[in-house]
Image (cartoon, rainbow, N blue to C red; front, side):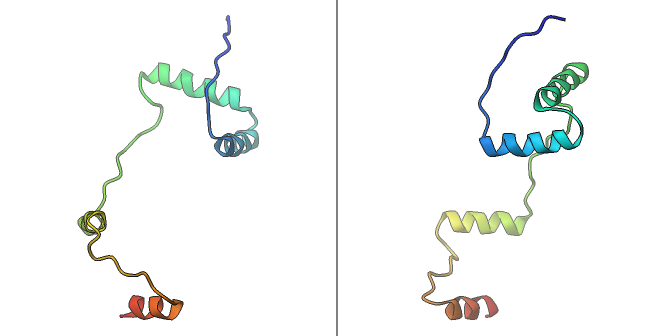
Length: 88
C-alpha cells in the first residue's frame, strides 16, 4: 500500500490530549487518524453520531434575553451583593 504525507493544523493542547488518550490505548495519533478515516470510508459517513445540541425552552429564552441585554444582573460591587442577588 502506497502512503502519502498529509499535514493539517490542530490546536496544540488538543493534539497533546489526544496523543495521551491514544497512547493509553496502545497506538499513536497517526494510527488513530488512519482508523478514523478507514471507518469513515467503510461506513460512508462519520464513524460516530453527530447531533446538534437541543436546548430546552428556558435556556433558549435566557439566551435570547442575554443577547438583548435583558434580565442581566450586575455588575456587583462586592461578593456580598452577588450572593444577596443569588439568594433572592
